[in-house]
Image (tube, rainbow, N blue to C red):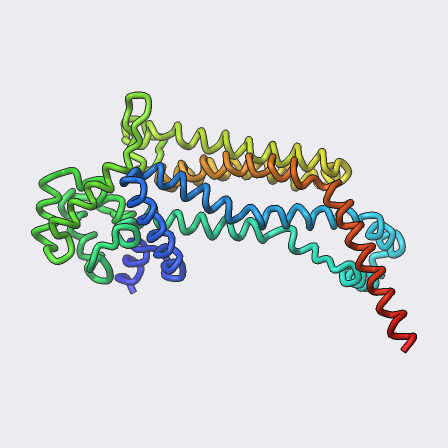
Length: 340
């Protein structure tokens, strides 16, 4: 059981491993295409994943528009059954309304968020476990992983190895460690494997303003640690997350002022999420924070794009036309059926 837990912590949760493998292969292809420029590959990957989500977000906007268009009918049913005892009748008439209108309000909520969480888990797998899923080091699995973890702890006299892949990457520049690793596990850490890991480790260093940031490290509040200077990444995560929530809130207020006033609690939750992201950014490598920053900036651009080209009023007008055409077609079909 202990070896299974160790393997899980070093190679990820088993249920997500196919996802890690898929995202790892995508990252490997992008790295090869851009000449091993890690942050350029991650930027392109983030743009592509957000583009995949764009049709889902547009569909969500259309669903919201349809819900807004049905508000007068919904309110009429709610006034008809004000007594809590009539809750069942209220629900039945609401379901009949949704069935008649061909509308499912549940499509509005969790879909895009669920997809975003899937993509985030895939990115985390590619960042946390690059030896296993991006570089595909042969033999780096099972009991070998646990043996390498024990070797790393003994070599650096450490009590704990949290993310084995990343700690190997962080130490691979130490020639004595690289040589000892190769001697201890010659079938896994061949000269070619060592060279590829070293190249990957170098690519995870972000050079900006004449300073080098090792993005395989986790931001830390502790002064004097290598992660302390990476606090800047967490701060930018917070700022871009706040900007995303604020843009979303402002757009929602413009689109539907009445609903935005009624859903003040939801608005508060939207504004609290950035601070949760800020907290999480201290639990994950800075490379994940970098992904989050790029994702937030693209999310803002997408929200503005959807607001400009798919505004609710235009969508509602289109829905009314489509609904009228559909109703008339249905009536015409009934007339023809009766005349036969």
